[in-house]
Image 1 (spheres, rainbow, N blue to C red):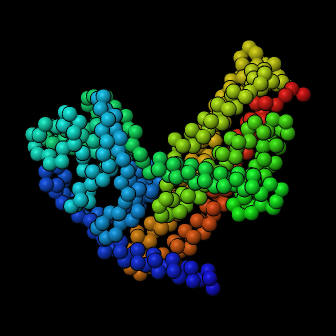
Image 2 (cartoon, rainbow, N blue to C red; image 1 turned 180 degrees about the vertical axis):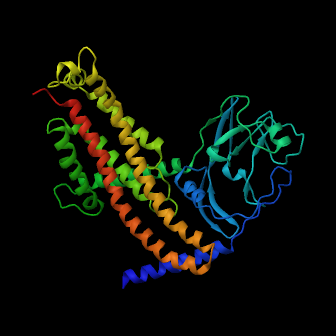
Image 3 (cartoon, rainbow, N blue to C red; image 1 turned 120 degrees about the vertical axis):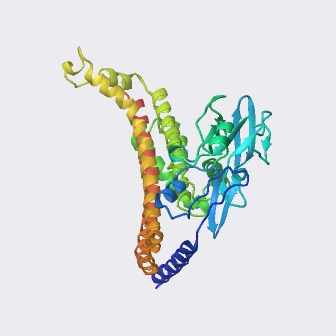
Amino acid sequence: MKHIKLLLIALTISGFALKSSMAHTDHATEHKENIHEIADEEVFDAGKMIIEHVIDSYEWHILNWGHTHVSVPLPILIFHDGQLLSFMSSAFVDHETHHKIPVFFDSNGEMIHDLEHGADVAYAFAIMQDGGHKGKIAYIDAQKYLVHHEIVEITEGGLPLDFSITKNVVALWFSIILMLWIFASVAKSYKTRKGMAPKGMQSVFEPLIVFIRDDIAKSSIGEKKYEKYLPFLLTIFFFIFFNNLLGLIPIIPGGANLTGNIAVTGVLAVFTFVITTLSANKNYWVHIVNTPGVPWWLKFPIPLMPIVEIMGVFTKPFVLMVRLFANITAGHIIILGFMSLIFIFGAMTPVAGYGVSIVSVAFSIFMSLLEFLVAFIQAYVFTLLSALYFGAAVEEHH
């Protein structure tokens, strides 16, 4: 009965969302400075909605309530032409039309609020709305923009350096603070309850800590050398695991696709690569350059095996990076794809929308539960492979 009640509640919510989406029409009016073009009625674009949810953003979107776009603005920090330009991402939004607009600056780097044609504009920044530039901040030739009503590429002054506090940055800070608070509490419990049965958060996380120590670190690296790498393995496991779970929570402070950002997974993979390379002993490099047990004609005069082994050194962290990024992002896309079916069919007829919502909500719930398992598996796989690489690097010659 509990499952049936939950399903009915989810269907009711999806029904209200469907009615809201059918009633929602967004007409863009011409900007008072004649910068914007008149837009037609906005149609639900599933691809656009999915991409906006999985990529990074300069604001933390919460919801659309009718014509109102509810979001938390984040600081934009741009270093360009020797000047640091700082303003909130809400400056990009025209509060009358709720559409993103360029932010113009004069030659002194001061923001121009009331722009008129022929004003002394040095440059402007805007969140790009077209194609591959979507979501990026780019330099705009202001005069060309005013004359031709179009956004152009960087023309002078060089590429601006973007130090903005984005959604993923805030999510990263939140996860770091959460981890510090949790494990500081666990560490304190170990000191105050020494020799006693674990209690509270200590009892929750101790099985995971012991599991990583015994089944990953010790078995992959060895009894003698695992302690040196255990802090990194614990950190990387819980960092990935926590952020995977936070990404499944649809409301702030969750909802950021941090571990589905290839820049983040790339940095984690680089950490593993650097530690492996710096820890590698002579035996490790001998196996790469002159692999034992391989026929001589695969090593001399054409070093086929050494080339393959050296390529493997770099492909291992690349695989770590792509595996985590692809699996987490794919999960989000699948869930959002199922939810999009409600609005796509709802635009045809209300009956079709309500009918498809039953299947969409059911599959979305199933995928969300499956993503909880994937959140743990991906953290485990990344940690295990990192431990295996460390073990291979420090293994002694037998």
